Amino acid sequence: MLNLERLRTLHAVSTTGSVRGAADALHVTTSAVSQQLSRLEREVGQRLLERQGRGIRLTDVGALLAEHAGRLLHQVELVETDLADHRGAVAGTLTVAAFATAARGLLPRMLQALRERHPALSTRLVELEPVESIARLRHADVDLAVVQDWPEQPLAVPGTVLSAPLLDDVLDVALPAAHPLAGRAELALDELRDENWVGWPSDELCHGWLENTLRRNGIEGQVAYTASEHSTQLALVAAGLGAAIIPRLGRGATPEGVRFVALRPAPRRRVFALWRDSSTNRPAGRAALRALQDAARECDLG
Image (cartoon, rainbow, N blue to C red):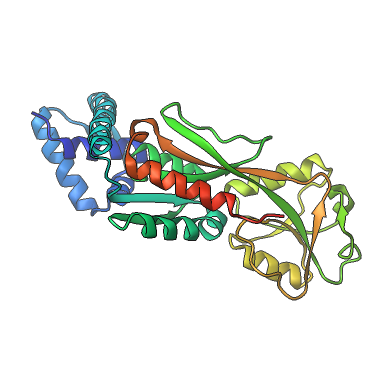
C-alpha cells in the first residue's frame, strides 16, 4: 500500500515545481523530501523524477501518480472535515494567508476574535501575494486566504476553491504636501499625467494594476520608484519624488509632508476570502470565516 505522506510529498513537488518548494510548503528539509521521494520510487518500482537542467521534473509515471495523489488528498480532507463537523469542535490548527494591507488592516481583529471565542483553536498567519496564496491553498498548506483583485483585472480562482466577498477598498492619490493640487478635495487621474509615480515591484499583483490604470488615463512609463511597503512609498512621496495611489485598508496615520486626495472616479479593489471546497464543513473554517467577515464589517474605510 502506498504511503500517504510520501504521496503528499510528491504532490507538493508537482504543485510547487521543485524539491525546495515542496520542502517550504511542507515545513521540512529538502533532504526529508528527497528521502520520501526515494522511498516512494522504491514502493512504485519506477522512476518518478528526472533531471532537467539544474532542476527536476516529474516523469510521465510521476505526473500520473501526482494527479492521483491530489484527488486522494482531496478525499482525505473531505473525510477529516466531515469527522470534525460531526464532533462540532472548533479546534486544531488553522493557517490564514493574506496580502500585506489585509494582514495589517483585517487579520489582527479577526485573530483576536478567534482566540477569545475559540481558545482550543491554534491559528497561524502568513503574508503572501494572492497568486501564491491560491497555490498554497490548493496544496492545503493554507486553510483560508484573503486575496484582492479589481473589477477590470479579476483574479483567476480554481474551480475547487470557493469564495466570499469581504469588502470593497477605495484607493486615493498621495501627493507631496507642497504639490499644487494637494489642496483639492478630489481630482481626476489624468490631471496628474506629468507626474512621476511611486508604485509596487514588478512581481506584485498591484504593479500590473497600477501600470494598466495609468495607461488607461494616458500616463505611460512614469513609475520611477517601487517599494512593497506603503510606508516607504509615502516617504518617497513626502520627499517630493512622485505621487502614489494608496488603498485605505490598513492605512496608518498620514505622514508629515503627504496629502491624500480622492480620485474621481474612485478606484476600488475587491477583497475576498478563499477556501477549498473540501473544507467547507470544517467547524474551524466556518468560525474563521465568520470572524473575518465581522472584522471586515467593522472596517472604517470612509
